Amino acid sequence: MSDVRIDDLPVRDELRGKSPYGAPQLDVPVRLNTNENPYPLPEALVERIAERVRDAARNLNRYPDRDAVELRTRLAEYLTKTSGYEVGLANVWAANGSNEVIQQLLQTFGGPGRTAIGFEPSYSMHGLISRGTGTGWISGPRGGDFTIDLAAAEKAIAEYRPDVVFITTPNNPTGNAVSRETVLALYEAAQAAKPSMVVVDEAYIEFSHGDSLLSLIEGRPNVVVSRTMSKAFGAAGLRLGYLAAHPAVVDAVQLVRLPYHLSAVTQATALAALEHTDTLLGYVEQLKLERDRLVEELRAIGYEVTESDANFVQFGRFEDAHEVWQKILDRGVLVRDNGVPGWLRVTAGTPAENDAFLDAVRELKKEQSA
Ligand SMILES: *Cc1c(COP(=O)(O)O)cnc(C)c1O
Image (tube, rainbow, N blue to C red; front, side):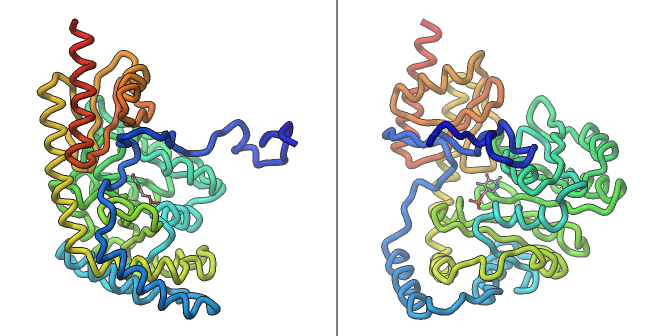
């Protein structure tokens, strides 16, 4: 039975020898490894979800609203209210997590014979979904301090002339944001090379000290801003991501989306969560304070820390980051080794979880200097 492996099957060549995406899911007391929100949904929202899902259940014999009109309208209102830039139903598209949004974008604008670029280290799923959609992946450069080295990035764009450009801001796993000027310069460079789509992945924007780049879609049909309810809304289990762009982009992704891709249960749950935006954004404010505290305390302990506009912090430097990851785990705290040499990433948790993490790394530092 189990002697047949993936590579024994007639799988596509580019999938041979590859492993699936996944952070280790270990059962430890303090899990600060996947940038989840540590706060469970408030009970009032849980009740509202139950109510909305009960209503949806009465119609589960029917297909859901294929165009998710009510949900997209509410998402557009949320974007308008939080960014000050007005978008409407026609600008917004939603799918099962922003990963599916990205997949639909790559199916529409990438694919065989085309390429996408990201500036790494960055979100590894951009490369993996590119591969899954037959899009060639180009690993673009970042500077030594993990900011985008504009000259080097522009050179890579001019050389490879990608069809899709990913800019993650705030960036994962490094935490730092990309300035509006840099994004605009990359957009100009990309358009000069060939007409291409620029995808600004704002999965962590609610945690940022700065503003959303949503207004960049104004007059630029080749710019897409992608968002998710997995992080700020504390709803990673819901699987709801969305994009804002010119209405033509929303029309284009519908050429590849599966019919009825967003279940009635998902739509009902997301609508309930959007009714509780104020409470959920209150948690975000808490987490931003905790994130800033992590940065400060890690520096006080003597670690190097990358500026963070996200709900996590990259810290180092270590000769052997994986060994340090293991030692922190031995103390009951799971952080993330993203494979960035010399660095680890910790997600901002509850104050108690962050204290447990800080105690663990403080102990390690003492051990090292003893
Ligand atoms: C977590 C994350 C996402 C979210 O993906 P979902 O599919 O919405 O859960 C998207 N982009 C980046 C950079 C992320 O870190």
